[in-house]
Length: 186
Image (tube, rainbow, N blue to C red; front, side, top):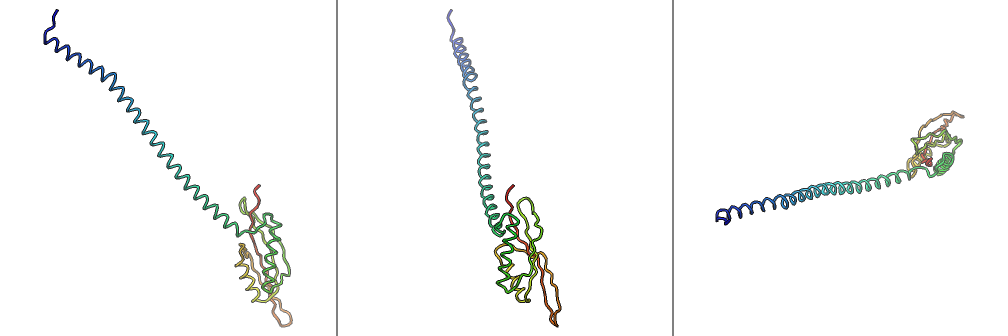
């Protein structure tokens, strides 16, 4: 049986269509699916990379901020008394106060350590009660020296008592001076 020209065209055209369908179904569509999957995976990896870059930048910023805070803490802690124990800090405070009083012509007639108090978990306040003998100029110079001392010293209370002796008014100031320490970590 011989095929007519028309049958040959139909077979060639039908074969081309069938080959095209097979090409699309088994080559092009799977390739498109693979490319779509690769594109989705690339998008996901790009988002993950962007998040990691942000995290690294944020971590870098946090490290810089932490370094700044640590520097500030060290700078502020340099104003504290050097001792870390309350009894040693009271001795250190008394040494500082006696030295300043002597430099300014005052006499400390009595020095009494008062009960220390804690400030949070890391710091404590150390206080001395002082009775002073001397004139107003010496007292003013002493108070000025306390305020300019490199360690952070605070005058908590200031009392002035007047005595009359032989037509003379005598002043006896009593002050509470405090310093601060960092207590050892528990």
